[in-house]
Image (cartoon, rainbow, N blue to C red; front, side, top):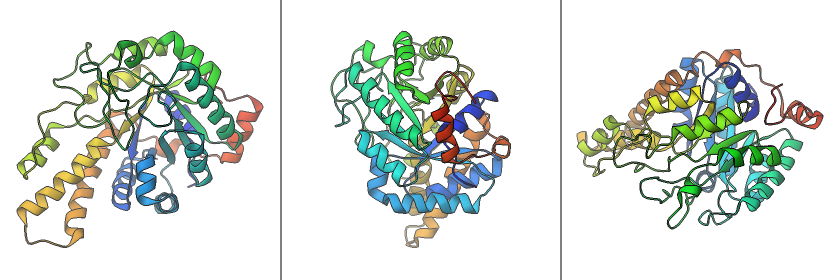
Length: 355
């Protein structure tokens, strides 16, 4: 099956009221685990690569790997997405290398450390949208700065994360501003800030409305009912994976992620894409540690990687099932990026309409 665009995938998710997990990938083993889980559950999936992943694996390798996964699993619709693009060059080079979707994170300046102005964000996201749409690729924008409502600080992952203290105004997306932003940028999906953050250390306690503002999602959805919303920093940091790591010699302090039941509520409020990276890292690393602890003489990498892949696959299956993604893969008919470009050119596709 040809790769699918984010817009086409999220349009289907909206029509059928489910969410799609977006799993970050860096290597073959992660890709195999994710797509095996998608195939087993008949789910579409978003495979996303950060700038760090692109530097680690290389664009040619990533694109070739994802294309191979698509050929091995022809019934699984796969979107290849650039996560947290920092400028036009990053986004357009991803499209050049076969990515069907890009995120232009204009909430930060190109250094991915300095919170940007609203005008900067609108301008650069709009420019990326015009270029991407001309060839049929999709664009995700971000409004608001990802970070903790507890500490006022952002988690840093793969070089992306605001430095210094952030205000409540920066940490929570303004619903009225979201309407203006989507109208001006023509982005296909909107990542919002509601208290989630990158990494494992999101919350010091199980989050409630004071530190995880799901009400912001609801307010934006009421004003933009046809815009596809995105939750970043949404790993759940499962307790069983913390225990697996620590029982095998790790030293993770107690921490809390975004509860899956809160994500399920978000999906009912218009969230269509849910970013997950830390959970997958923990699943694989936990098994690496367990194998090394249980069999200290083991040196065959495959003996570490196979249980790590199985642990990650199990986690991915759970998310496909909990998000309502399962059972929808075979229902999607993939159209080409050329045809998507024609849809954009005709004006049939804009953030508040569906084909």
